[in-house]
Image (cartoon, rainbow, N blue to C red; front, side):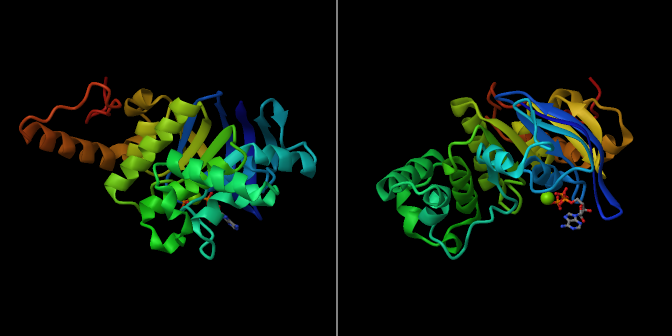
Length: 274
Ligand SMILES: Nc1ncnc2c1ncn2[C@@H]1O[C@H](COP(=O)(O)OP(=O)(O)OP(=O)(O)O)[C@@H](O)[C@H]1O
Ligand SMILES: [Mg+2]
């Protein structure tokens, strides 16, 4: 459905992506994991056709978007919904205007927009009453939900792109956002790409994970495979996460009567070896 093939991209003489390849099958969620500045948001900008790679190809449904004219690129962009880094809502518009923005742009009727705004707010677990509030009157977690509702309302896209959807949220709100992302995949079968530096989110949401380091892929595989990867960069990158998991496991073992549900996503084990 989506494929980056040997994509090279630089800004001036500063290389950003050195040779990037990965694919996302229909209905799958691909996580791009990497530290700040590794080129994650750049990948989404290239996929939306906002920037052009220096070389390589980017396929969306079999069509190389680096070769299409601008009008066609605009159509392809319409088939993708994006949740921007930090949610990025229009702060001078109400929640309802934010969610209905693309529909208004497409000149839909007012009642139709009202109905869609209500439907998508409900879908992301918000009370439609919030439509008249301004974004800064909502909590960070609610703002992210509005951003997801806006991405969905944008022409019911086939593909959803999430840029750091949980950054800056408290752990519970972050957990609810990743639950929502999982629900959207299972309920609506959306193909998704989530870029993040958060390893826990990556393990929870990703069917497959690509790890980037300074614009190059250092790992590609399932979350399970990532836990046993031997690459020194991966070892170092995962170390704080392994420590946190070990500490959480100790706390859980000490708490009386706590049992993790059988459906919990697989967690990496400290030490990493199978
Ligand atoms: N508009 C720009 N002009 C010049 N350099 C840029 C621009 N946007 C990004 N870069 C550079 O490209 C590199 C990758 O940036 P990108 O935003 O893709 O990183 P990221 O992985 O999304 O980081 P973060 O986790 O902080 O969001 C960085 O070195 C950054 O400085
Ligand atoms: Mg970024």
